[in-house]
Structures are given as structure tokens and as C-alpha cells.
Length: 384
Image (cartoon, rainbow, N blue to C red; front, side):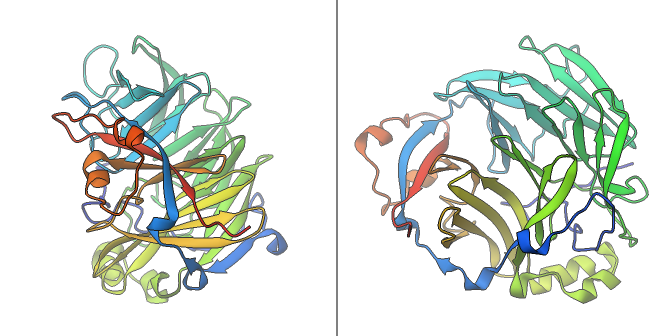
């Protein structure tokens, strides 16, 4: 089966075009209305970027071997950052916490210690690396040694685009709406690939294309699941998946007519004409949560970044634009009261209104390549 991925970011739209708000009646999808945090995107108070303060910068060492774009997945362990370029998909780049480049892991190729395809990766707190490689209606999970040796962990008869590992050694795989290959959008397996449970029954019946998205977000010991175009954000715990956040996208919600159309026979055009929104990130700890919402409309590509003080319930939303204001366009985590963002050296330098201490600017070298930079950011005016 061919693999087609619509890119978003600088391009147009990534492959989760259909993931959606179809009702599911699976026994493991529990919904307690009282426990769901529901709100409308249009009613959240706006925050300006000058209310965000950059507290630290980490420049990721860049060479000709690790040039990357902006559509990246970033995960970290106690000692390292791991970065996967979703457009290139040629390996996972490993960095020290100070930004020093350690080399490429899980290399895609045809030689020894390589894999045929790289769809997603998982990092243990101790820095162990596991990767997902999907081919046709089957997928493999490999462990990648520090010497880049490849060892098969399991095979599963499923077509996932993303995965994660649970603390007990079991796995979750997400397969989206790819009928007839995926009867349920998510499954749980044991450590050998035997399917233990299925979740989120796939009831979409129109023509579908293979697609790719990031679905699993660990924050501490808590695991959250997002689906593109689904208005719910889920938490997975005790082998159950339960909706915890529901956002009304307003004018950018999927129109009802969309469900009557096939993707390539009017569905895609309808989305482009009206504009649409979907989740592409959720991070949470005891103090704060952050929701990243991608909004695509005729005028361009935008993000709404929602900051929520979990102690007070106060919410603020930052609006960014890929065309001219994407300094805070790519969040990737929370540490205490600091929000983590991915950007580039050139983007920081062109922000004349961004007040940075001299010692922070000194952390960004003047080099041949435009450095990717990780930023630690706080909200200056968070109402307690």
C-alpha cells in the first residue's frame, strides 16, 4: 500500500485530514460529563507575546549531518533530547541537554544497523530508544542501541502511524481511520505484540488515504491522546481511555457536509474553503496545561496556543502565524512553570521587541547554519 502524507507547517496540511468526531461506543471509552473540561476557543482571553518571558535558551548544535525543518517531534530523557524531523524521516537526532550533538540514531537505509521506514519513536527516562516501522498491514518495534545496533522487539498485525510504551512494558498503537487496515483507531498489545484490547472503533466508511500524526503525549507519568479533528482530548489510565478536555472550534469546526464527501471528491476542497482546526499537542503538569491547535484557513496557517493555570482555572490564548510571527509557534512541553518551545536562531534575532538578557544571546553561536533553539518560557502576567 502506498503511503501518502500531506504536510503542514511550511507546506499545506499533514495527513490526518479525516480524523474526526465520529461517535464511538466501545466498552473501554468511558465518558463522565462532569469530569470533562469544556470551553469555546473564541471566548478565551488573548495574551500578547510580550507577556511571555524567555528564561533560557539551548542552541542545538547544527552540522551538515543534522539539518532539520520546523515540523519536528521532540522527546527527552534525563540526560538527552531526541529530535525527529517529520518531513525527512531519516533518523532520530540525539543531543546532550546542553545542545551538543551526539549523532543520528535509528538510521533509515538499506545497510547494516538500519531500518526501512521510521514512523515514530519512544524514549525511556534512562535514554533507551525504541522506534516504530510500519509497512503495509504490519508494523515492527525495534530497540536501538547506543552503537546504533538494531534489535527487533515485536511485530504486530496492524497499521499504526504512532505508538508509545506503557510503564508495565505493554504498548499502545494508533492507526487512525485507514480502512480496511484499521478496524479500531487504537490498540494495546503485550510486550510481544499480542493484541490485548482495542479502542476507538473506526466507523468512517468513505474513501481514505494513509495518514500520519503524533497522538501520544506523556507528561510525567500521565499519558494523553489527541486525534486530529476530534474535539476531545483523552487521558489513558488503568487501561481505559477517557475524554478530559473538549474544545468548541467555532467557525473552524468540521462542517457536517464534510461527512457526506470522500476526501478526494470534494472533502478536501470543502476544508480548504471554510478553514478548519485540529489539535497537534497537549502537555500538562500539576500547575499548568498547554493545548496547541493548528488552524488552517484561506489566509494562511495559524496556531492558537492555550495556556491554562490548573490551580486557578485561568486561561489565556496566544495567536501565532506561520507567515510572519512563529517565534512561539512550536511548543513541545512543560517543566514546572516553564513552557518549552522550538524555534530557530534567525527567528529570535529578527524579534526586535523580544528583550533577552545578554547571557542568553551569548548562548546562540554565530555559525554557518541557522541553529534550532529550544526556549524555556514563562508567562509574566498569569492571574492567580
